[in-house]
Image (cartoon, rainbow, N blue to C red; front, top):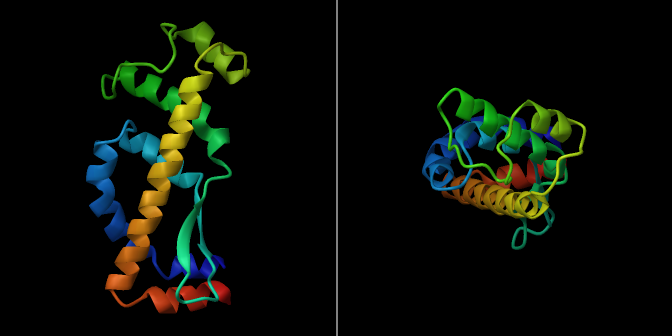
Length: 149
């Protein structure tokens, strides 16, 4: 199934460029989006049925990287390149970073859940856009069949 993704690398790059405006309008920076996409895999649901087949985002690994998004945001804020608002109520700093790395960070659970939901929603929008792109280029059927092999 990995080979099907190799065949659409150029299409993904095109969709990435087209999707940049959507990312810019979201709560995620481009660096955070890159991390989210790294933790996301794509599958084709109902691949055997041409009428129901669709690309879906496998977001199973996203909860594992969500704490890292805050680290990316903090690092970017320190360099002056990211939104300075933090999802937690604390001011951040070394102690909070250490607590977060150890899984001892307080609060923010609701914000993390909201952020995870937003990431999942955005990734599925990307998957939908990728499928629309493949369909418009006449590649969808070929990709769907390659997925099954």
